[in-house]
Image (cartoon, rainbow, N blue to C red):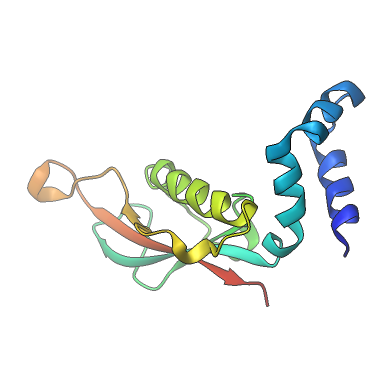
Length: 140
């Protein structure tokens, strides 16, 4: 797929009025995004569970939660249950990876790519805790 085809797909997906789309199309930051979108589309984001104790959702070490390069959860490629208390911190990481991809940088230059759920575990009044590490991997 060529860049212009991918940009047109984005345009259709956003379903904006012509005037709204033109605002985006003239904006230098979106022009930069459109320049990098084709290369960025070659990646998906993988949050791998690296530690899990007492997780009510059943997340276990080695499990992978997959997102496309825009941050959409790939439900068919991820566990049946994804804990809502893990998602807010994953959103912060997804944004950091997305920024790198859309600015034409190596997405894996995110320095702090490890996070966890809000549950603090039994020693701090919770009942479990999950830690994930995110990486951008080329699509197969």
